[in-house]
Image (tube, rainbow, N blue to C red; front, side, top):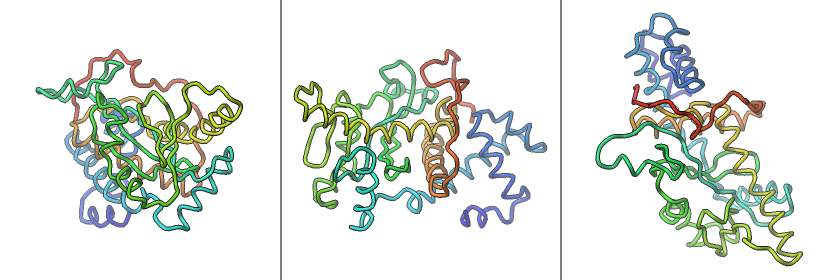
Length: 277
């Protein structure tokens, strides 16, 4: 966080209070609660703090969101995934998750409406066996198909170029439209033989890491589940910032937050949304 402290060292509001105000926002998506918890902050000031701090944290993404590149790092990931259900050669588990946003307005707004009917960013991530996000693509509208995102990402190009040797990605769902290749392996649609059933069992148990990573990420930062009522460019920054913080917590061995039955997930809210910040 040295970058963040440096940026704010000459500001009238202390860096720690700026950070706490931003974390409060990540936990609630409610700037009024943020303002109430940190008396003396005007609404415009709170908004500026949230977005400045988010940008500072997101700028650390290359330090904390890292795909394994060396043979040692690749083998470490493979060993950890193999320990889940004996599936060999796995570097990462990949899927997409939707982060709800308010309508962007304009001619392109409907591109962000997903198949469940709400506006969102379709975020592709790859995680390791410890739920850390090792790759993230957070820029596609909610209507974008999962396979479209993967087919246009640089990670796929690197796999096709052989950058990771015999390493593979496990893909969570067959209905994501992903093709089975030498480096990407979805579950089988209709496993018939005992071997195919064993493959699916191992594949699903191993790939469950990415689904669980989404649960942990969104419980740590409920704003991702409740939705982001901010402008599109700021929403993308907040998504990356929370991914950075999530990885820091994973690396520090912080306790995984328990399930919150009161947390309303996207698609279950009926509130009319507008951009607040």
